[in-house]
Amino acid sequence: MFKKRLALQALLLSFVGMRTAGGWAQTIPAEDGSAEAAPIPTESAADFWSNDLGQGAGQRGVASWYGRRFHGRRTASGEVFKSNELTAAHRTLPLFSYARVTLLRTGKSVVVRINDRGPHILTHRVIDLSQAAAAEIGLLALGTAEVLVERVLQRTPEQSTGTGLRLPG
Image (cartoon, rainbow, N blue to C red; front, top):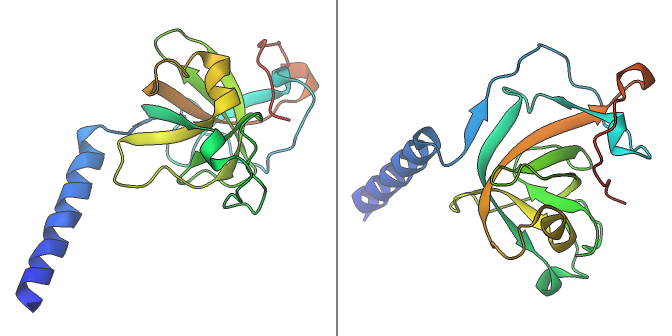
């Protein structure tokens, strides 16, 4: 019994390690070595700029969305989930931080606030968007699609250029 359990654990660990290295989720190296700071909510998407996710400037992988079935339930942050807000679930980004999610197929982007944990580690996804965020970039009809997730922080007024993105709120 003990040997079977040990073998199963070793198999599971090797599978998870192989999948991470195999590219289900890919980390893209940072272009600059800028330090992370606490996210500050603002009025416009032009007030945000990309920063690293810890070890890279972005994370490429599959995104999905969740909506009415979870509407009204508590998220990992303690908030009540509202499918009509621009929010998302991510495994490692800090709760209440912001991320720009770009649908690689079309280049459309949306800035979302991370307020939940997920998707589950055994899925092939890197982020789950709210229904409103998915609609903003055209992900609703697709169900799942390849995206780029970038952590964003507040810009200074000199750096603002305007991106045309809608902010969560």
